[in-house]
Length: 195
Image (cartoon, rainbow, N blue to C red; front, side, top):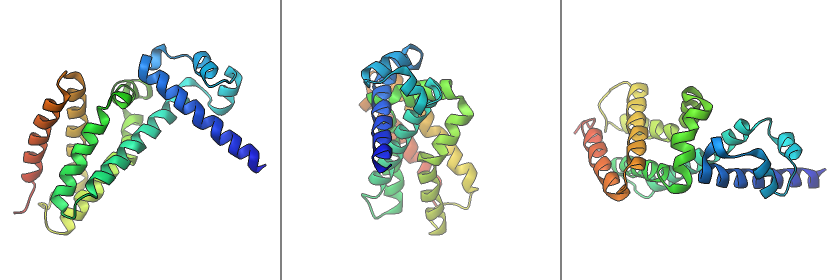
């Protein structure tokens, strides 16, 4: 029984990896379950056994990417002991992670259009937005931020970061665009300071 669970886990992991490669390179619309199954050395029936549809497989790929981005945000923010720097580092990590070539198509383009904006937002809230909310809440409790509504502030900044990532992804000079975005984000965040 334990062996079957391990085999299933490995099969699902392989399918997600192969699907991610396909969704990244050719997009959701052009990817086919037949090709994904063949590359994973499985039958189409085996793919359907683990995933009810291509959309469900895509959702799991997107979830894994959003978790990666969330983990990178948390790791970058933890590089500093200062709350303000943690916030800036986390924002930079989110935007730069989201526009990486192996993520941007799935995360920023196909994600909202395939799953719908509402589902995409719920998934984002469970990962990156959760880290942002926790950091803002901590900073408010420590007296670093003005006593503005936390929920509204989190959604405002998250929206700005998501839109900034989309804008950066469309620009040929990613590094310059990232620096421009971070100068604006830093200025906006400073305006929330109690200092």
